[in-house]
Image (cartoon, rainbow over all chains, first blue to last red):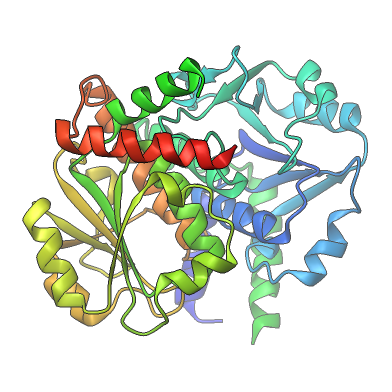
Amino acid sequence: MTSERQQKIESVLSKRQNDITIVLENVNDPHNISAVMRSCDAIGIQEIYILNTKIPAYEKWASRSSCSAMKWLTIHQFADAKECVDIIKRKHSRILTTSLTTDAVSLYDLDLTQSVAFIFGNEHSGVSEEIRSLADGNFAIPQVGMIRSLNISVACAVTLYEAFRQRTTRGQYKKQALDEKTYQELKTKWTLNHETDQ
Amino acid sequence: MTSERQQKIESVLSKRQNDITIVLENVNDPHNISAVMRSCDAIGIQEIYILNTKIPAYEKWASRSSCSAMKWLTIHQFADAKECVDIIKRKHSRILTTSLTTDAVSLYDLDLTQSVAFIFGNEHSGVSEEIRSLADGNFAIPQVGMIRSLNISVACAVTLYEAFRQRTTRGQYKKQALDEKTYQELKTKWTLNHETDQ
């Protein structure tokens, strides 16, 4: 491996955030999942959660989509909503769903520099009632158009980039957030990823 | 039409911005075009430009994609880059391309409360050299991941929502930006749109 590539791996790992994650609940379209993963990688999310209570587990989609971002993320899969939320609550202090209900607060009124997990729901039915009842709050991306729905990969990217903007302003990408053990484990794994690319 | 629907049309028109637009240069995938149009509608862009110097004109794609946002936008189509840019320069004081070149400034360093046209290029080849030479500047969405490319509909949405955020902070959605003639013309057209929906 070139030293340039090694430096890139170290630079990316030094910016990975440990207190922000996303959950995809029954998200169906492999293009959406792939785009979401690219956005996660782009803003420095390392761990993501795939919760499939209604549709086949993600592997089946993964084999059909060419998701280049997948190998740079740590993906947790669950089939049970409560089990998934319990695990997330150990690591994150707020779980927020997104849906266009009247109780939703604006994305731009959230402090995203603090620990947070965002849950995005199925393309058609949105976030389930079960997940809504387990979450700490609900937010929406403001919209001033005739159509009131953004593509899920778009909604996710807008949300994550607002977190990125706030965290950049606060200098949260300037110091390593991963603990040293995780950093070293990922460094080893990513170096192997790179070698299998050749 | 219900008065609720009429009120919605008037509310949306009152927030349409007249000094921000996008150009899609040889963007190929109808899913991307459709998602971009939904983002434009969502943040109050009225006029957009489809520049196809290399691929068939947009109608062919439009007929294959179900783009619900299309009927709420004013779409200008061009086959010649210079002609398209000349028209845009009459209405907008800055034309910015997006590509990951070294001269690119960060999206977050741009003042997007001022008149601006964003040009997004083809999924594979990006913005053409011709367009680059005609534009006023180039920007990039910062990325701290292993993969250096965001889906075009994601990049467009992140860009437009940063404009939305800045303009909301400045109160630019609080007063009507469309001139009265355009407002009334669109109101008539949208009312008819609605009636043909029934």
